[in-house]
View 1: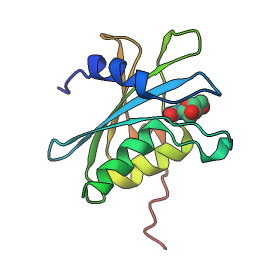
View 2: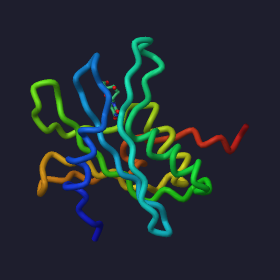
View 3: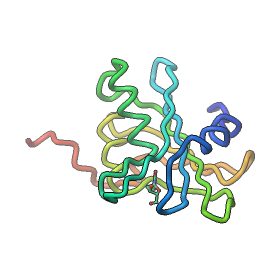
Length: 135
Ligand code: THU
């Protein structure tokens, strides 16, 4: 059974910088050896340079020395501009990165509340993933 990270995620939401969308996202990544990495979305006035919470957490893990394929779990919570907690699923770009950085077997936990948590395998979220084997 995975650990419940609701308390940590809710606190982390306050660190997100989302002045344009008002949509704060927090992500926690757990690696196969049990390491823990946090990420939030950081928006830019040049909109495409915004970084999502999930990729921020994964790229921090890589920066810290995590090897490719070592992501085990991704936990996500979001809060919209009206301050309501929202269950969020990763965007397409983050699904690609999660697939590659987990060896295509991560479980993504989308939190709606402290007790309502929806798990999906990355394979469900991104079927037929392009993993670069043919490059
Ligand atoms: N966002 C994330 O951080 N993760 C997701 O999975 C969905 C979208 C961010 C990007 C942008 O700052 C805001 O949410 C609205 O799209």
